[in-house]
Amino acid sequence: MKFDKAQIFVLVVGIAILLAWDPVCKYMGWFQVPVTAPAAAPEAPAAPAAAPAAKTAPAAAVKTQPAAAGSAKKAPVAAVAPMKAVELSNKELKLVVDPVSGSVLDFFVPGHKQADRKEDIRLSQNLRNALSFTALTPSPFEGVPVVISARADKKGNALQVVRRLQYADGSVIRLEHQWILGEKGRNIDCKVAVINESAAPRTFNGYGFTGGLLASWSKVSGDKVRTPSHRLDYMTSKGKFKDIAADDDEEDFTAANGTLVKWAGVSNKYFCILLSGNETFPLKTKRFYLLDSKENLPVAGCAAEIPAFVLNSKEKREFSFKAYAGPKVISELESFDPSAGRVMHLAWGPLDYLARALLWILVKIHSLGLSYGWSIIVLTLIVRLLFYPATAKANASMKKMQQVQPKLQALKEQYKDNPQLMNAKMMELYRTEGVNPFGGCLPLLLQLPVFIALYTTLDGAVELRQVPFWWSPDLAGPDTVCHIPLYFYDLPVNPLVIIMTVLMVIQQHITPMGGDPMQKKMMMWMPVVMLLLFYDLPSGLTLYWSISNLFSIIQLLIQKRGSTPADATEPAKQ
Image (cartoon, rainbow, N blue to C red; front, side):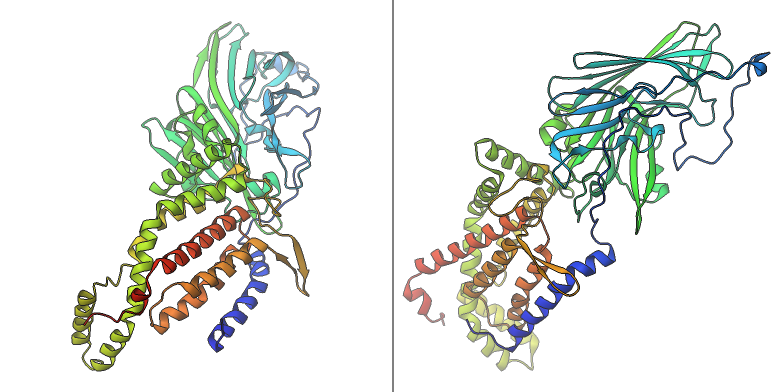
């Protein structure tokens, strides 16, 4: 295969862009670069003296209820001392509970490791005590009680925490928290009971049952993330799914406040935390920011807003919720709620349903005993076989177009001064020769939605994360085998994307192509463009594209061998 000046120019420009691509992207902030993973959970978290208000809460002085007569001279109420955190776990999930604050400080997810593969993924729920998961949070405009006693009782996979809280006026309430984690799975049953132990009635206003907080995936795992997909998700009481980007404008992010929802939660690229109640509940959105070296990283959260209620002396009120914390696995999400699979965010609109169907097929292929790498290859072959007739028709159409190119060029020369007549003659030639000028494009356009859905499926599947295949250590990351040190940065060597590019060049060389010079130039640039787009993408994607290109080459060779010599040399019909 000879290279002319134009091809050499394309090759040189492509190499130059490739060398500059990674540092430019990092400088512009197009990638979420890995951050230091959070440290392990403390064994004895300090009891919060007062729940800090969320960043979005208006600044106001904290008002306390008026103290009872003669209470001004009473000694301050002694708060309970910090207690050791209690763990509740099964093989899929571990909860770290603080008995004093009555909340889950952390979720640890066994089987899913940090970027360094040393520690389990930790969802870092203790970023802010006021929003800790399942804490019954008081309004910042009401007197904040002091925890005067706390105890934790663990039986099997159930944990109950009983706390007594005293307000400044001397009234006392008892809060009974219960978390039940099954023998397997990541669904959590959560219950809270409020008992008024005082002699007088007490009004409870501005309380919420929090659904926890979740940072972006790069913050949680330390992974390099190109498409973070960090969102607040919820299903309205009318069955309409909605989502809000975690970094959206304040007005848009808080617009959902008060909406009646069946369930709500926060999700990032691979993980989510969801909350649902026995009944629909008003949604309360939460958000604050972590200061990073270059930008503020949003941490999104939500809560079930509890309407105001009054408890008489010795009266009790119970609240029941269900939660899910863990990876975005369709089967597990749908066991939490049949509509929760929408938090996958694989694609857009109808393509999302197609992408989830392809992911389901991929998981089923893996369940037959194949590794995920081979499952990707099998899935790619299945898709290409389904579209074999359409691709064959497109290839045949392009071959016919190649055969009539000399006559088309003759018509263009003959009628170059009369474009209208030239177009009429060209259409007449197409009809005479039985050629459809769009025959090579339409079958390929029909395949495009499937290929896009498959692309997004492989990019968003947590099942592929940290799964090795061949030389690649991680199907969800680049298959880097080494680095070439340069004076400004180390260039990673990713063999799969290089193989993919070579296969594209071979495919381009044997594909029937018309004589249009502009089309040829565009096709020359295509491998370079794809090399840049795919170079640092997950190796699962480049594996899929490489196998797809290899299949196309084999199909072209089969069709070429199947054509008779007469077909190849027969002149166009007059």
